[in-house]
Amino acid sequence: MLCIPIVAPDNRSALNDIAEANRLADVVELRLDYINEPDIPGLIKACEKPVIATCRHALAGGRFRGSEAEHIAIFNRTIEAGAHYIDVDAEFAGRIADRGHSMLIISYHNPERTPNNLEAIYARIMRARPDVVKIATYTRNVADNLKMFHLLKHAAQPTIALCTGEVGTISRVLGCKYGSHITYASLSPEKRSAEGQLTAWEMQKIYDYSSLTPETKIYGVLGEDIARSLSPVYHNVAFREMERSAVYVPFSVGDLPAFWEKFRPILSGLSVTNPYKERIVPFLDALDPSARSIGAVNTVRKEGGKFVGYNVDYVGGIHALERRCNIRGKRAVVLGAGGAARALAFALRQYQAHVTIVNRTLWRAEQLAKAVGGNIKNYDYLASDDYDILINATPVGRDHPDETLVPRQYLRKNLVVFETVYQQETRLAREASEAGCTVVSGMDMFKEQAYEQLGIWWPNLRVDKFRNRIEELFDDLSRTFLKLH
Image (cartoon, rainbow, N blue to C red; front, side, top):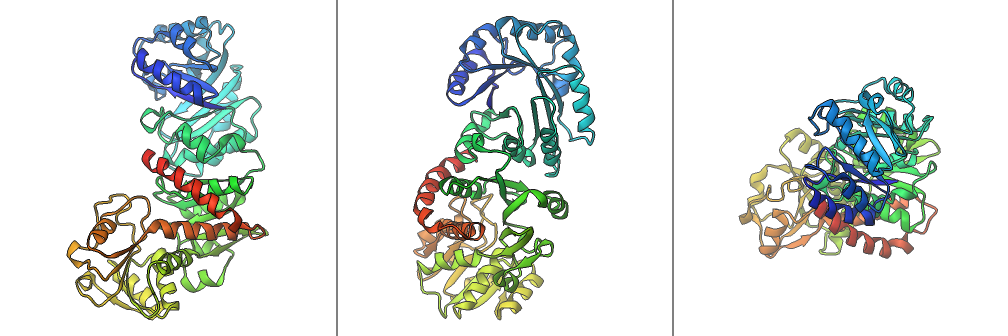
């Protein structure tokens, strides 16, 4: 079930939010610790869906700071008003004398970390005879999500288990696969009740949470800073259109070896982005020829229990470039020396292009230039007119669109500028367009490589017959997604 929390500051705002939540939610949660002097009977009456009444104390990460007697009095009022559920922190559960007809959710919240003794905490909650167990803990370690999945798989009672924090976002989606009784989503990013909470729109339109089952296969994008990645939008749309029982989630990872050890058993495939395109290679069982020659991987597929790495960045990049210009024999400057830069440099060499690498870290530039038979230059080289194609294969402009590595005066009318950042228009793309350059979009490259990934993951399926519909839906949903982020 999808629960939308109401975190408005006053009764009037809460009523407005309830009206919207009534359209989207299976359950509405009244966060009474947020609402100033809440009209409890009026708010509950306004809810057309079952109501969870919650008044979280500041000690458990909430906002209520009154006395214990005041805290208990609020719960008694919600029971009298007919709340379907009351959500009580574990330390206060024994002080509710009569729950009436309300079902009791007993919660454990840890706003600082995910402890290792979750099973003992679960057993302690069970002794209080709840109708629903809820455990929510903060994490910066993606592997903590697996602890929640383990709890859900072995739950003896209806259970809600999730990790808060951006790294815990996957628990809100995958919890549905593992049987979480309720998952929480906000009306908007500004109205979320916990860090890492997705919006109801994302849960429904992107992840299609209600369709997830224990048999749903898990795919995802592996990276460090991927909150704005459009990969979940594209691939979840594609899975639905192709009628695949699969879901695609963002894996925000700080420790690659630990992630691979813990998550390998549950994965069916991955997209790989910065900074792991090269780092993941030693963990894979095999590489296809393109990934082996490039030395970087952006796609992983599970094949007979083994994980095989592929690289389709070069396909996406070359196809995007080919539509706008003639590549063969041209002089190309590649900014960067990471996984994307490597793929594009190798692809350019297949078209007999003359490749020059410009990168802040000299030794990486030297390695790549040697591998592709190219040259290295420093950033001053950009002031020359000795090149025909300029490719930004760095993340500069992704998080801060006004940042650029290329001064405006270096852009000229006969130059082809390929901006691989796709999440928004960057300063480089805007100024290149103003200067009359031919601008190649990173979105074109993104779509091409995402399409190629589908063919790798589902080799026995005619992916091409779904492509137009996938891209039509993706274009529509991605606009809303980027506004939210």
